[in-house]
Image (cartoon, rainbow, N blue to C red; front, side, top):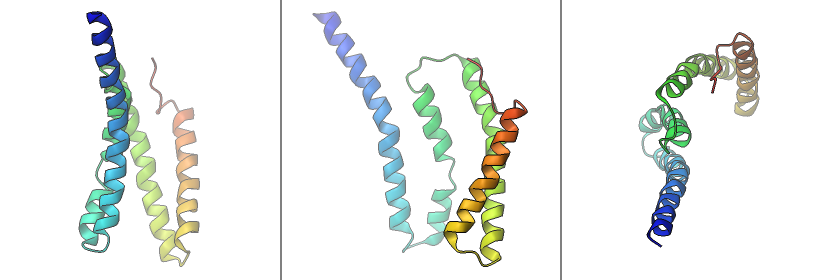
Length: 130
């Protein structure tokens, strides 16, 4: 009986750990939406926080069932991904400056980003061996 209660408690904690990143993501989106009319500067700062990285780490490694080497390899694999994201920002900026509307600029940015991610994967720069 005591073992069943402990197992149930552990299961509930794991379920909460899986749910918390989703709640945090929604809260951040709502906060950015709230701030866009009050302080665009704060909205930009919040939008550029490395929150997705933190949430990704939390989702993947939050249960504590990982080894240090896997976590290290995961974080190292983020570096080329972040460089592709920086290129995405530059492409979207340039396309907007050229007069494209937001949606085509974002799609163009994602097209370049996807090519870079594919190249980085082919080069073995974005790989986390298990």
